[in-house]
Amino acid sequence: MGIPDVPNSPKPVFRLANENNLLGGTIKPWLQYADARTATAHDYSGEKARDCLELTGRFIKDAIRLYETVTSERWE
Image 1 (cartoon, rainbow, N blue to C red):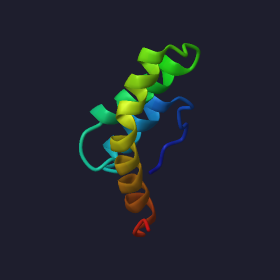
Image 2: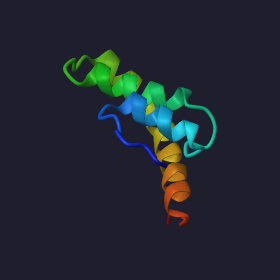
Image 3: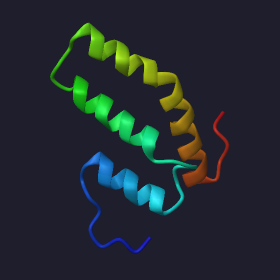
Image 4: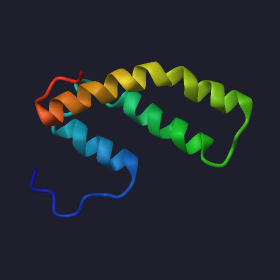
């Protein structure tokens, strides 16, 4: 992609991936995943855990789609 310095935090990486059409649509869910991860990093409340778990199914589908896009292989 010709990027001299790749950022070392999720949101800028997701923005670069989106700019290069790797996320299969909108960046919004990926930013939600990053926020959920950050929210649960040091706070183990039941509410935050529940919120994070609600994203899990969608995250898995998006992660599989990203894998398939990057590798040109079908996930099995």
